[in-house]
Image (cartoon, rainbow, N blue to C red):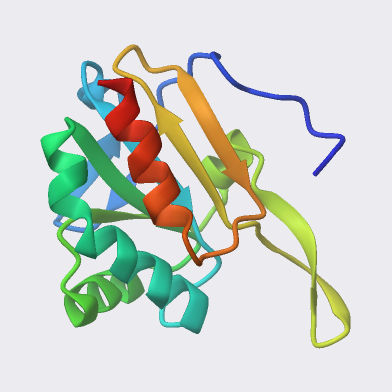
Length: 158
């Protein structure tokens, strides 16, 4: 994490990906809005479920602040649709099975799981302003208190 260059105030290249709601995500479609794009390891796991529910529970406040939320993982669209339905998520989930979006945001890392090193998604959140630039990034996110911190930043952007 410490060797990674900062990507703050850098415009995110336009990209597209499949997402829930039978739509495709295209970054350029959201210019003029603030975005929260959060990356998580896997649908239906404890930390990821808690994080999604916290974004869900504060969704209306994010919306009032002119912000759209998108969750991203390597899970399939089918898995995402089920996860979204099960939790009643009011925002869409982006399916990144080929890791193109994860690679763009540099969130694939070696992690330790049960004593073994595995490649996986590092829990990370990015706030993108109305001009398409990253204004804040969180990497190696710990779930408790994180969504509140993101909302506080968003509400401070005006």
